[in-house]
Structure formats: C-alpha cells, structure tokens
Length: 224
Image (cartoon, rainbow, N blue to C red; front, side, top):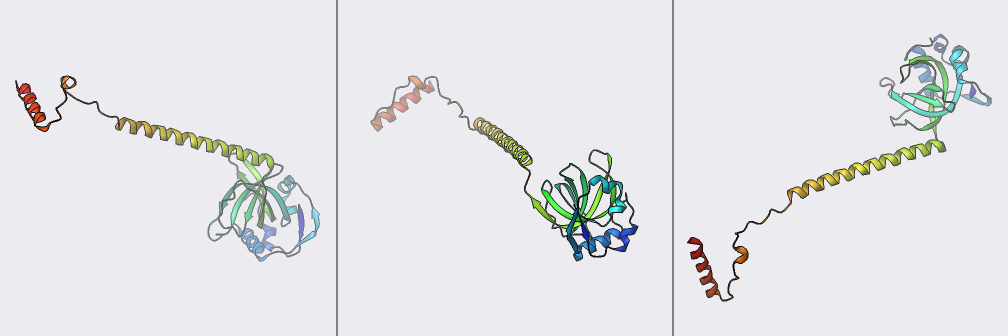
C-alpha cells in the first residue's frame, strides 16, 4: 500500500546508492525527516508489489508504504541512533522487508505481527541466515501497530509452549527422583549389632536389688 507524501523529502534521498550498507547521509536525513512527522495524503491509495521496489527502487524512492507482517529479527543501531532499530519483517506473502524504526524502547518484539508505515529508502543487498545474498526493500518508519496473531500461528505457538512446559515438568520430576534416591541412600538405617547370646538372655527382675544382682552375675559369667 502506497500513500502520497505532502512534505518535501530530503534532497539527499535523490543521491542515495542502492545495495550499500547504512548509515549514509540520506539515512540520517530520513531518520530526522520521520521524527519530524511528515504529512501524508491518505485520500489516495496505490497497491504495489514487493518485487517492484526491488527491481526499480529509484521509481519508488521516498514513497510512503504500509506493510503487515511478522517481525523475525531486530537489532539496535546504537549511538547516535539509540532509539532506532533495524527490523527484518516478513509480510503476508512471505516476502522480506528491512525497516528502520524510530522511537524504539528496546523491547523485544521478535515473533509479533505488526502493521507499520515507512518511506522507501533504498534497496539493500544482504546475506540471510542461510548464507544466501538477497535483495530487500528498506523503509524508514515509526509508530508500529501490533496485530493479533494469525489463528494457525497462534495454535502453533501454543503447541510449542505445551511441549516446552511438558519438557520442563519431566526434567523437574527426574531431578526430584534423583535427589530422593540420594537422600534414601544416606538415611538408610545401619543394622543393629548385638551379641549372639542377646536373644537367649532372660529379662531382668522387676526388683531393683535383684536386677543388680542378676547383672553382676551375668558380668561374672562373661568374664569367665
């Protein structure tokens, strides 16, 4: 989706070089331009394809584009762009976009679905996670709107979460069983040690004097 831009774009945008890294002068000017709040005419809407921007970036440079997709990666640019992050967003057609978002707080947004508008900055040529060089339309935008997760994707995430919880419970159970076995081994009572004659010895008399006499007699017998 493309909307017309009423505010004059930075002149440096006309001299930007595609397939190069950031930042450059046009990038700095576009960040400041977006921060200033550009006026947009939303009375006219034009739909263009991702590949059209990749093939003819100069034709669409500066246009205000709105996309919806899932944030798959994010990276903070650091100073002097402390509030600017680089988002890798895959749209509903599974096509990749690079979006430089101003006004970020550092919150982790990976995996969330977003709708965001930005100005076409340039085409970038980068290596993806599989090591393949690909072209990406790069936008500079702000004020993302967060969308509800698609039903199929939400179900998949819930399934992954259920398996993760089950795995944690299994590990916890194994730890408890292991600790229980170790404690059981340490607290196992030692067998009593007694004389072979203990079971045959008669009980002592109830009378204290007689009991003492019996104990003395037993002692004399054991000495012999």
